[in-house]
Image (cartoon, rainbow, N blue to C red; front, top):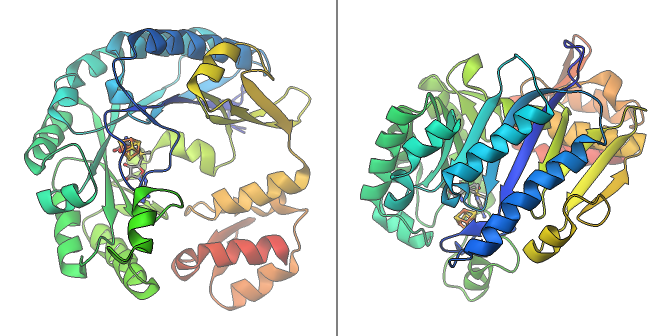
Length: 383
Ligand SMILES: C[S@@+](CC[C@H](N)C(=O)[O-])C[C@H]1O[C@@H](n2cnc3c(N)ncnc32)[C@H](O)[C@@H]1O
Ligand code: SF4
């Protein structure tokens, strides 16, 4: 919660589930966009109604961020983006800065609309570049060529005050030298923020089947760790600080305010099919919300809590576990006072082994700790 302001801080996540093509590694809640014009219009109405319904669960708030994520929100009509921004501003009026981000894919069709998104009020573009060469993009099943990618990056850097680039690493055969070149190219492209993700083979995806059939092998632990360490040292050397496991920013102001909402345990409203949210009721009870994931079900139930959106109350234990999971990902760490219900004995041994540090009432994962974060979290939660 934002204790510096009288009204607690709030983020808003808007999920747009359509993609032009479904990438073979992706397990997000997405469907192929095939001219579903009526459905898309109904979805925008449903998202607006859901925002109103969820706002009624909480007291007055200071809106700090709006994030259009997906799926592919750069396929949205810019007028719909403008309308949802206006709805949010009306529900949570205020004078302070509101970071407005939108995730985009770098195809020519979408690049042609960047100016319209800027006019609609988007100030920060998160561009899913993933790679800069055609071989890697083809392997990843992406719908954009290297030339389109370069054009999108240039246009985005000119159009938006703030630009973030997503990359995927640990592709088959990719060594530290090749990955370093990709990182340098991203760092020199005018972005203030870079999010490199190691390729994860998600169960049930085409990549999962390809790996099981022996078509390619994912990076083993050693190569994954080497490329992760390469990421840290190359980006740090280029002025991009790793303020979170997979997020690097050139300066304090380049940090993603929206992601900080998640990592600091602040509240956020999640709207759109399958979106999650965390809301603290005026009586102090923290709620976990989860919207219906099927588009038709979401449209049918939106605006009606417990029909469109499922709400559960979180226990103190749930809250503390989530604080560990989220807080240890960042260089801010987590306040010890948030962790009270957890077995504290594990903390000391992990401090002694150099994986955690404690200072000013906060627990922070060291660089060595961040490398084995899943293990740390297990130990802290289970004792
Ligand atoms: C859900 S996508 C949405 C953004 C946009 N549709 C795109 O594809 O660029 C957000 C980011 O998650 C990352 N991502 C998704 N699936 C992944 C996977 N299996 N392994 C690694 N990164 C993944 C990609 O870098 C992607 O840019
Ligand atoms: S475009 Fe993005 S969200 Fe859509 S399938 Fe590909 S990775 Fe997933």
